Length: 202
Image (cartoon, rainbow, N blue to C red; front, side, top):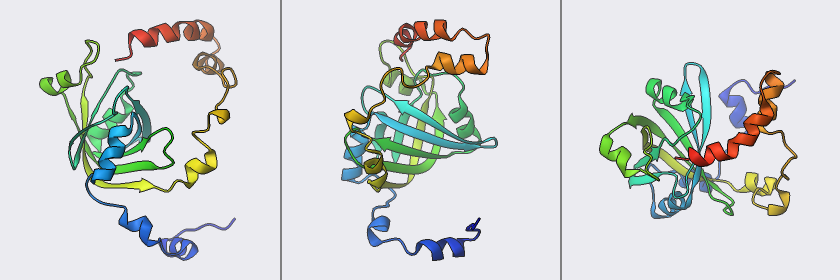
């Protein structure tokens, strides 16, 4: 097996990045980047901690983050599984990455920066939905922002509705957990899940 073990070997193998790959990276939200963020209701949040990396999906029924200014994003921590893996990481290591996706757009927008957690009462109240407030707000200070090449999404044909997986073609969450722990009642979990999610969305 031939491995690349040094940066010199890596750079020699791949060559130099083109101009377009470099000029798109800036340290703030341009007008164009701002419009993309405002159009995105989904992003992936990546954090790092002593146990390793964590990548968490984040979604909302409106823009998934609030733009505070050109270098600051606010991400409410809505209801979830309460593992708080991402939040524990941010407390110990502020480095974060966000990847924004917009259905139908063949690029992604990437933001790298540093984050803190706010539990300011007024800020939490400003994100209230259906009488529910987030438990905290992740405030991200942008270090770099740039859009990613479309080839990956084009290769995956990601937004083609004809390529969607049919319901029943993949195991349900209940089936996954019952496979791991035979005594777990996967069917009851799956049967109750949708109603439980509707009641605890925010």
